[in-house]
Length: 237
Image 1 (spheres, rainbow, N blue to C red):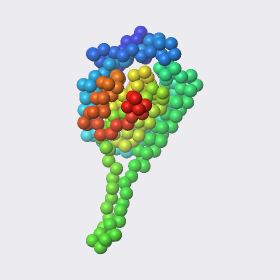
Image 2 (cartoon, rainbow, N blue to C red; image 1 turned 45 degrees about the horizontal axis):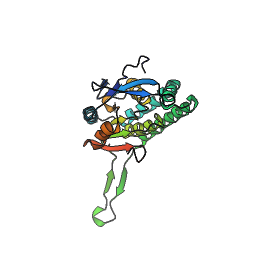
Image 3 (cartoon, rainbow, N blue to C red; image 1 turned 90 degrees about the vertical axis):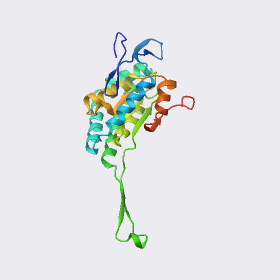
Image 4 (cartoon, one colour; image 1 turned 180 degrees about the vertical axis):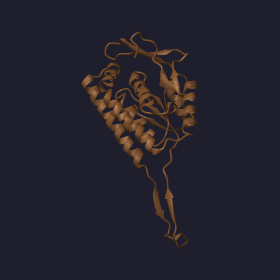
């Protein structure tokens, strides 16, 4: 987060991006002071992110690689615990002690996701319930559903993001993430960490910052978003 309040760029469609359409001021909930700025992304930016995510999935990540990325993410997040806790405390007005607990839970969420990446299996089904199936069997395989759109809330700005991003990566799905406008910095830190330190290819995770009426609706309505994960109130939804 820049101390002179330059716009903090977001990872989007494989590169760092600061919107030409303006920015969003992020203010501390407890006193209204300016703590930073993020890009005011547009529906066109959402489209670029989704197109890049879909293109990225044309080169699948094998299960061992997904698990390795998630294990590394858990280790790196644990190592950067204090940095993430301070980011959460500043943007969400949480006590640092409480923010540390959230970081710890996010570490655990990544570890659970890594386990799932290693244990995603199909099923073998005997076909001999009828005479024509004697001596035959069928099998099922779990395949990535496609691009995941993730809309996260403000109250747990790290762990509830990891609850969306971690399982999606485990399943082999690229993600376009919209964090809450009040608390975007921990999400940006997380995405940068996954890409820069954990081996996640850049186009597999984009962060789009902006309001629900613009960025949120564009993500929900995009025809190439195969699954949407949303946490929020009925009014927001």
